Image (cartoon, rainbow over all chains, first blue to last red; front, side, top):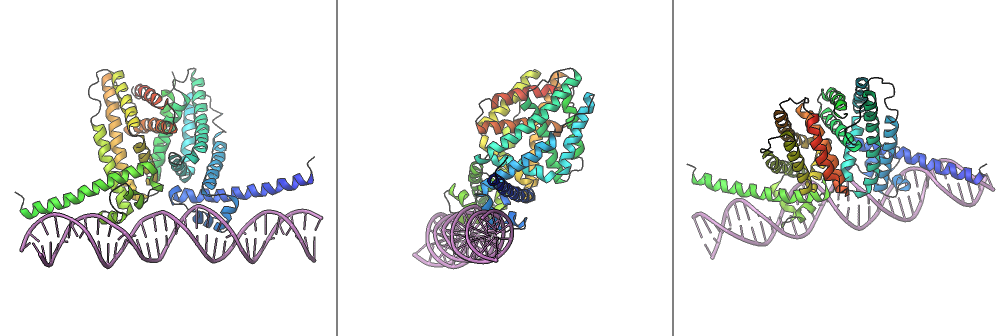
Length: 205
Length: 205
DNA sequence: CCGCCGTTTGGACGAATGTCAAGATTTTCT
DNA sequence: AGAAAATCTTGACATTCGTCCAAACGGCGG
């Protein structure tokens, strides 16, 4: 089995990682509130029960904290979507399920999605974020592509677009819906559902 | 006619407005380089031949300067696109012309478009930017819709989507292409052209 | 030539930022 | 229980930020 030293060490790094996660979650709440540009380490610390100095005990600098947050956000993100839309036996049912899923995700946590687009924009200026952002983009693209493929299978046809193409189109709809939802447009969610539902048949033979 | 006083006064405010424009243009260059989050008034001043104190002579505060920049960006933006694609007599020719136009716009000034998406993201946190951003979004949506309508007319069919829907889809393609172009993907522009060309027939009956 | 007024400068201010280190506190191990 | 290691707090640091202001500049009318 594992030696006592190994056990001790494992619990130690686990506690360390647990606290890192705890701090990162609090940081994500602060970031979702204020956005990257306006979130300082001290305001992040205010979202925790600890002092600001502790952040430098668990993270080397601000960039490492933010990138850790992005990675953590991604974990929750893929876990959220990997369930997928399994039980749909007709094309339009799948399209509707996907539309409802995206609309529900937007309604459930609009501030988190706002943060995502903020961080993705920042990654165009700050190269340190690019790898993590690209990973998240890839997993989102996979999620979209699984649905498009499943839709095509149900119709007996083939997709007429590349995975990245499909992702760009869905993402465009989602981002616009988020924008309008945050402004306060009450038809943003319905328009998103409608747009997604109509997008599927546009992407197969 | 205009009185001498009015003439004199007009030249005065014109000089004032000219300098505002000059400063805003320099600010736009700085913003395009660094992004909203990292651009300070002093770094903006370094892009001009003046000192940082001058900015507060022409702009009340930073928000007024930025919003003025956004408005100025919009002017150039609509002027850039209002020419449109007049001379196209077949649907696929129009689609190709539009695809080439968007790809050329991206290649010509990628940093400006990066700034646009940055500022649009910021507007989701800073309500002061929302009106100007919404105006730009509207004019871009009009630009897209004119092309979709023209394409539909050439095919003798009707668009099967709303203007905002079309804009969201095109914008999704463009934003992804920008992202990949900045990362250094050499096929980003070609994929954008292909995606745009293929998007038109998807949006008509 | 002087004085005026629109411009422009450069420095100063308080506040906020990221970072760091020394000390206090808590946990862990023997 | 006591020593050692970890966790956490506190205060300080050098910068940088937006903002403001007194003074200097410069052209133009009197």
